Length: 189
Image 1 (cartoon, helix red, strand yellow):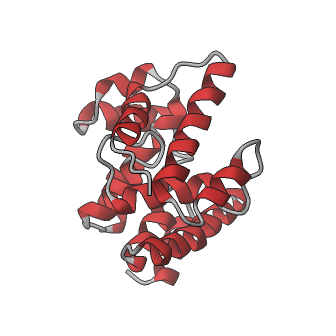
Image 2 (cartoon, rainbow, N blue to C red; image 1 turned 120 degrees about the horizontal axis):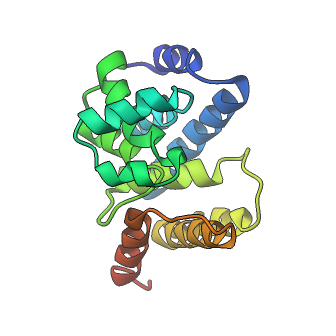
């Protein structure tokens, strides 16, 4: 699917603010893909659709999670997590995108997972550091992403865990598993 067609489909699902965020994620993902040797077209497509389900009604998302084989424990955690698996599902069903790499990058862009693929890492990180994001710690992650994808990702996941802890919110276990996996497989260059 070409960029303009994908953007046209996604724009109908998003607010203006979220659409601008999506454009930022798209450009950042392409930059990261070039930098770290990933497929730029897949990065572009996954970035465009990463928030496809963001504004679907919670009841619709809950029903899709219940009926489409997603981990049921997702429903015990913050509903902000739900749009990722539901987005992957709806991107396939409604937009006809069947590339498993692209769908998995959408699926894991909020929680991560152990042994993330290069494309999954790029979408997770692009969502975190796109130019419209302004919060403590984002500049450090942007700086790390100039040369070290995994180090930037570790810092982004760490920041997310600390942010949720400071707000006394639950943390989805897959996020901890992602962090542990990244640390275990860390290579110091």
